[in-house]
Length: 320
Image (cartoon, rainbow, N blue to C red; front, top):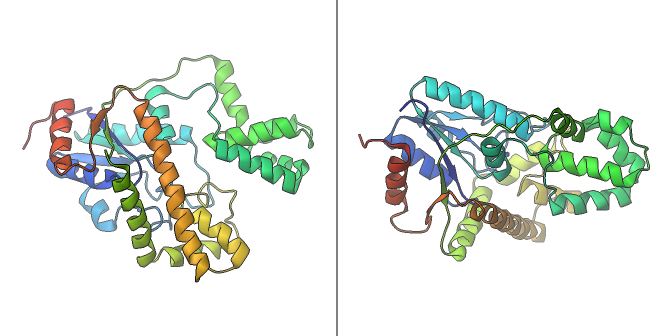
């Protein structure tokens, strides 16, 4: 079993956590989280983080490794995932990379690109902020995350300032670091592992689970968790942690209304659920561009049985 790795991906709310736990219950395995939200401490309910009981039953990695005020990029993930996988293999166990942050999966499999794709939502938001705040203020913000690039740009160079901020916010890596990697001319490190994708055949099934999960989060104390984060003076919407789905929508509403009661709470549910559905759509689009993935119908009655059969075949395992 030494050296075996499996990637388990899928849209949000498709059942990846339960699937990974099912595999680990059948064979000796440990789970490496591939989720850019689960890395943050104190953000448990709104990220649907595996419970302490689940984490006690199966070792998990790359969960609760950062404070929400800290930043983490895709290069950090690749490094940390490689370390975790090597340790898991040294123990003679299967490493399951489970999660839905597709940029992390792509970077781990293919290595870092010469330059990241820019998220259209990021571009629009930065354009609006530049107009509202002025480009000298955006230049000062760039200085905080990429001092090397900022030093060579004029404070009113809106096009280049926005481009540098787009690169950083889309990837978590400063433009200057991307340029250094590109100029070095080294070949991208490529890794191989079978990819199982949990994809529902009925989009309505997924939407129903997303809506139900948001309601469950609220029942479990999502609002109290968010208010506790909001009380901190060092957290704001410029941070990746606070831009996580659900948190961002609430933060924006609190900026305007000051509370999450009544109609504002309903708006939070609507916007949070809508943003989660949009995220799931992007995840499915990415997955369907992976021709070598092995698809499991997440909404099929025999989904778990199919998952076990495919996992056993792909990894050459024997049923205990």
